[in-house]
Image 1 (cartoon, rainbow, N blue to C red):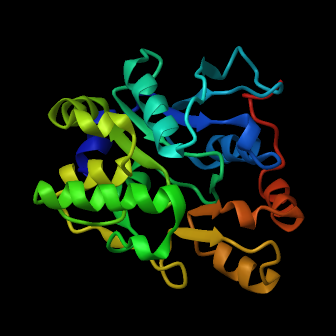
Image 2 (cartoon, rainbow, N blue to C red; image 1 turned 120 degrees about the horizontal axis):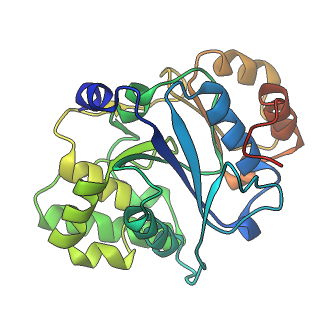
Length: 256
């Protein structure tokens, strides 16, 4: 549980892991995401990037693990990055898994991240293309195992446990192929508590930005209530980048 994790961690450092494909990134997403962790993650941590690198990486501070992106299915690439994290001694036994388009916009600790959060039930009709196909595979798999069908793909950071990750991949080796939404498989398998259902209009957790021109007044009022900010590909814009620069203007130790 989150409380047990908090007790176990005490003051130990935890890895914050970013799978990253520079060629598919928008603007300075990763730079601002890393700055946001340095500014607002209130637990000792180090940064690990798995995938492709940026010229601004400070190699004395950031841990970079090269990994080629070999599939057109993003979930396959994510799975390869996750297996790389499991195998690396630079990644702690418990670790934070996050993305370059997720930003911490208020002080948080491990408990905020470990709280199980869902968007609701898995619903392929809301999606398209490969993601929809992967979700359909996930639902079929979870049903066959008698597991819940919650959608844990919330675009917020996850807390993973290497021991449970290894056990899951050994128990269900087909998952390692990557044609599934892994976070939903993992948490539906291991989370025994009723998850928190996100609703961006009312919950204190996530502000998703999907428009290039959000209403500035609404944006600012919601931002004040949230812990996490996420942008979809359609939501990255000059407006958002100016806000990210405003929020995270201080250079991190992970930059040259």
